[in-house]
Image 1 (cartoon, helix red, strand yellow):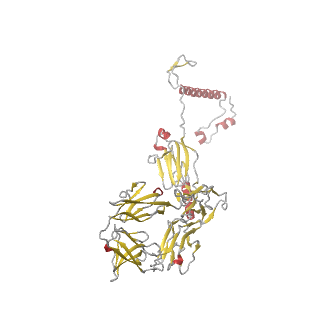
Image 2 (cartoon, helix red, strand yellow):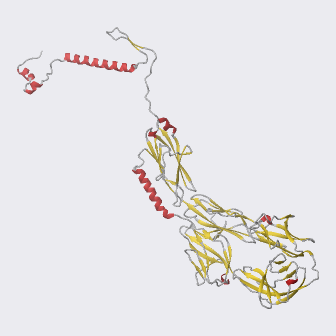
Image 3 (cartoon, one colour):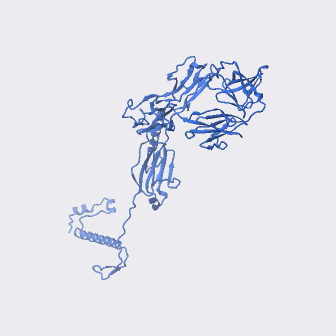
Length: 629
């Protein structure tokens, strides 16, 4: 940015030349924009289940939108760089990883690396797991007997371990026809989280010699229901169905959950009549109807806490009540968490010469053990106080702060990674440090400029900076934004020329507008003020002769008896000058005649007639020997 003061026309050649040169410099430097990569996708760590040998390929996306030049991409599985083969294919330009015919051998942690000239950015980890859809090993039949009016449980024997976990269901099978019908939960029938089927109390119709109950697991991936072991239930009839008080059948006693996850508490009570379930905390009923954070399902038997927080840790009470009695059970929620961010490293763009600090601060969940110091990486390579250049890098004693001093555009553009971990998991953050050229003032005016009233002055401000930034020019007068709508100002925004024309102002108005003018040259990271003090050239004032208030008497000259009295306030100096001139003229006349008298006739001046007829009186006098007396 340049700021010239000049009294020339604002279209002068010099201004045009400077503007042209700055434009050429800026355009040529536009090819030098630099920016390290920063992976924007995937944004979070993920666990993905993949159906093995699916007809569609498995594709992982990795993308960066800021790196200049555009980065090249690589993928790593469990820390080992993947090389293209008939199973895994990496597109270095788009960042896509394609896995053909995914199977359990491709299970693992996948991470994308994006690298250009200025740094290497690392993505969050994606864990791929081959979905396991396993059927029951044991499908044999067993028999069970219960009593009418009493609670009863049919266990789900040896359920298969599926990933992701399936949903338990129960079916009723007609042994004669082979038809199956799903057993749905209601107030009297419940399925717990382990797949067992519970009757709050038995009815005679629950058991039949031609009916079997089968535990099943439904896989949402394959949309297949896998039937397991079968049970034939016999219900012994009673003449009088007894009423029973609430009795606990099953309940979760301690739930270890992770911060932010969906937490499920469960309690199932038997009894006749059917007990009503109410949930309490700290002796007070939970307000289920007025919140979406806490809700009940399965007729009150299941309490769900959405996005569990640390303050939700503690004891919860499940109370069952019918007309005969009340029964309770307590469930404890233990909220654990991987490290919780207080301040993760943030991507930073700094001006060359600045000092930069990255912060990696996290905390454990309330009541959990302290965290180990953070681990720092630069462009994916581990660094610490012993391996880094201590003249450039500094690590705080607790490892939370990484300082980089006097950053250089040529040497300190980089990507920075931080990892904080505990026994539950870890937090990862990737950030970048970009360094740009500072604002440079190519030329500036003198600190003080004097202007003659009636002149116009043109102030030209121009500058250069990093090609990734666009300069902004703002004009101020006496620390206030300049009102360029006034007629004495003209701003050519194309070349940032401010013209101040004093000819449209009277002198007093021009004086009022003298003072400090500032052009603030800035972009989002830096501001440079260019200041000039304008002052009006003082007006040259002619001094008037002293005017007396008393009359002036001029005494008579020689040969005159008249005394002249000049009224007070007359311009005596004019009289004096005229009198002096007259005296000089008189003296000159007197001198002329005195000289003439002393030197008569020695010079005879020829008249025009004598010259015309070639007469020479002086020669004739000599020839005739006339003598002058």
